Each structure stands twice: as structure tokens, then as C-alpha cells.
Amino acid sequence: DVKVTQSSRYLVKRTGEKVFLECVQDMDHENMFWYRQDPGLGLRLIYFSYDVKMKEKGDIPEGYSVSREKKERFSLILESASTNQTSMYLCASSQTLNTGELFFGEGSRLTVL
Amino acid sequence: GQNIDQPTEMTATEGAIVQINCTYQTSGFNGLFWYQQHAGEAPTFLSYNVLDGLEEKGRFSSFLSRSKGYSYLLLKELQMKDSASYLCAVNQAGTALIFGKGTTLSVSS
View 1 (cartoon, rainbow over the protein chains, first blue to last red):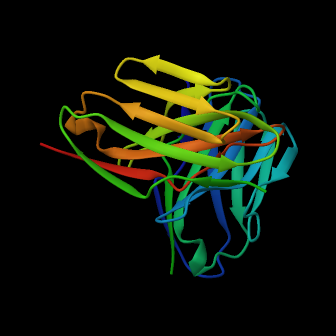
View 2: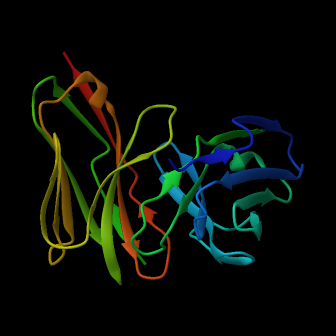
View 3: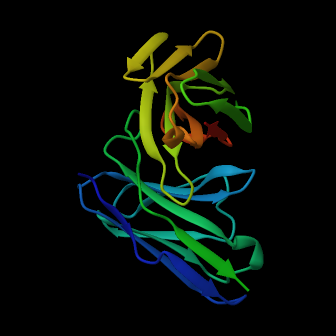
């Protein structure tokens, strides 16, 4: 079974702090994704990566950056957290970009005070 | 750009049949996914349609009409455990899945 593991289920940070959200997958998938999920807005794509060191912006990349130094790990970075980044963050991976089923992690609920 | 619409909420009773519709406008269409998400949990894959027609998988079926930009998820013999959000997601060539806002289904006894 595919396993996508997000390092923290719950985080509380202060405005202006740098925040790292880590995601690891164990099925050698090429593609990894970061979404955020908010009530009434659904899942929105922040960034995705189709290979090591490669990244593409999604619909809402502002205020975020990502890092993919190893195939199994995809990190989401909030350089200076703001209250409007309080959300549920979901990491996912897939074998193929265009037709591949996404496998999601359990999510990281971030609260920025 | 892309636009994906689905109803916000639906209610149904145990044993009934419910159809959740999804309409989309997108370029470079490359398939449509349905995911189920229970409260507090991660989304899980239900179905994938890339060709027109109906795909049946047990109590769940999914239909696609590419010419109409339309899909539906059909749930039969509803059970309480089917209470969840159902997410329609469109695959555009060369990019990641784009999701609709989701439909919250409440099943009552």
C-alpha cells in the first residue's frame, strides 16, 4: 500500500515565523503535490513537483515555496507565516501526472496566531 | 483557466439512490476523478473516467460526457457510512488535478 506521511498533524505558529511542512512517500512516485483545504473553497493546488528539484506553481503559490531534494520527500515552506495561511494542508503523490490516482497524506492542520 | 461546479450539500436516506453532478469547463481535458473524504480524514480515490460512458464499481458508478463537460457520481443502496464529502477533480494535460469545492452528503436513517 502507498503511504504518504506528513510530519505534523497539528501545528500552532505565530505570525512571521518560518514554517516547514514535511511530506514523505514510500512508493517511489514521480509526482508530489501540496494542496490546502478550506471550508467553502475546497482543495486548492499550491505547488507540485514532477521530479527531483523540479517544481511548478499551482493556483495559489503566493506566500509559499517548496523543496524537493530527494524523490521521496516534498517540503512546503512558509517563509513568514500569516493568519490567512491558517488551513489544512494536504500532501499527495502519484505515479503518473496526467492519469495517476492521487494518494493523500492525513493532512497537517496549521494555525497561525 | 478551469471551472468546476458541484452542489454544496445533498441529503438522502438510507437505502436510497443519490446522484451528485459535476460540470466543468477546462482546456486540455485528460480525465475526471471522484474522491470521497470523510470528516477529518484524507480524500480517497473512488473512480476515474477518461472516455464517455458509465463506469460501475459496486454500489458506486461514475458517468462522463466529454462533449457536455458533465459527470455524475451515482451512489446506490445508501448507507450511513456514505455520509462524506465527494470531490470532483479534473485532470488537465501536463498539470495537476484541479478540484471542485466538494459536495457534502448527509445520509439519515
